[in-house]
Image (cartoon, rainbow, N blue to C red; front, side):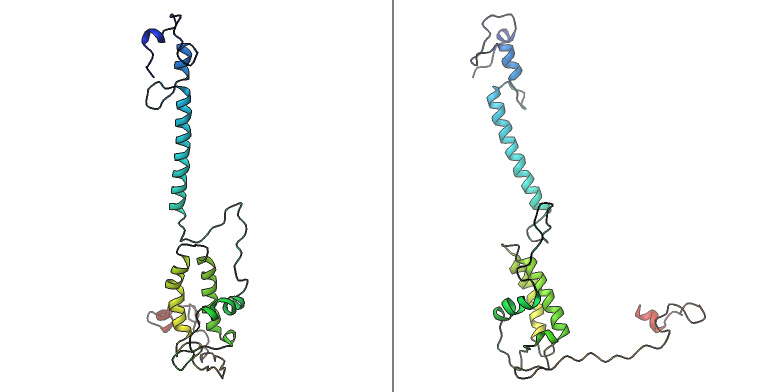
Length: 209
């Protein structure tokens, strides 16, 4: 479209109407452009729609950068509360862990059917279950990272000959016995000596701290 001349833009010319049907002065008032050029109002609206779309895209990019898919999912104000796929550790071990990561039990690979009677096994398996529930929410790489960062190291300990099932066999369950401990002498854990004086440097308690 040919830009209006200065004469047409002046209010004194009777034939200053442009192709939109309005006076030239009214057309110039409607024309807007961030580049400083006069363009029809319809073109301005198109530019605004494109700019709004670009803003939405940039907002999504910033949101993805601040909250990457591999991070812990944080529910928003309108999101439903987090619901684990398996509601308990027992159901996760029986329904997922045991059938998925089955190993032939032999003198080099240990497992106990009564895993729930081994405190260390419960602690390690619960850590695996809870981290698995979070990892599964990332469909792209969550479980892959879970295998690398959690399962591989924990499974090696659980099934090792020195792990929590070391004394168990497929035919015999051996409950884990606590490590022996001896009570510390009276006052051993106190910060001060009985007379109120600080413990001397090099004392066993100071060394432990």
